[in-house]
Image (tube, rainbow, N blue to C red; front, side, top):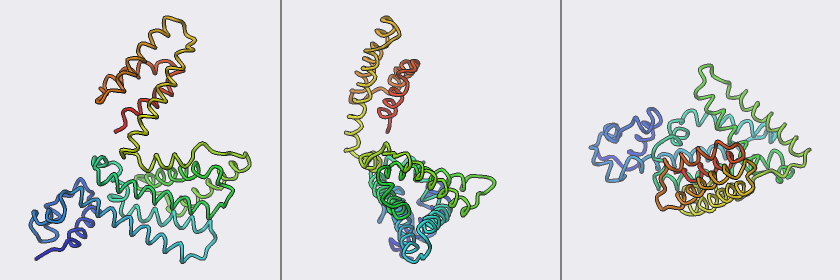
Length: 294
């Protein structure tokens, strides 16, 4: 039998869906197609390349169906949002080894997958934005990006609960619960005149994390966070001797994070020392997170 590229993608999609990426081998995919293992590599250089194609097709189908659902619905905007959440949960549960588990895979640092992930993130966030604006209108614009990120976080966490809870949650009840809480949040932020914390730049950083542009942005943020630590130490209220000691540690940290290949264990140790001081803990933790992020 001579399998086509699409035959291989179909088999890989089926097996990734059933078993997950890590538990599926190229040999098993080839066997499912009734071809030799080497034939798979005529089309795909690696299993990671194959997953990229499978994931791309899977998320494309998701957006196509979500768009079709949106266009054919005659319900109220709020009911349409609930139905979109229900559909999202149903689809992501069915394809959770592809649509959910990929975030925990070691290939998240794989260049081709990073690019695909950024594209999907951007499309998903834009989808959230359009749905929320359709339901709540112009009044949410002052805090739009905060609401999008909050909505995304709620969806992600409740999806994990639905997938992993021993006593299964009702998908429909969960969707209505989420929208009910969104209603309360929007009303509160509107009445309080909230302008939110996040801006479009937060979206851009989230979408492009891992790219070369984001790496440059990380350096800028790290410099800013380190400058905040230095400024706090200049006005340190805990005594000259202790301030001098902390400043010396901070100088060592500053020198290390600017190295081409910073030593992570040393950064961890220096940050742990500075974190002992309550006034420094938050900026140091944020600095460490930025510097040590892969």
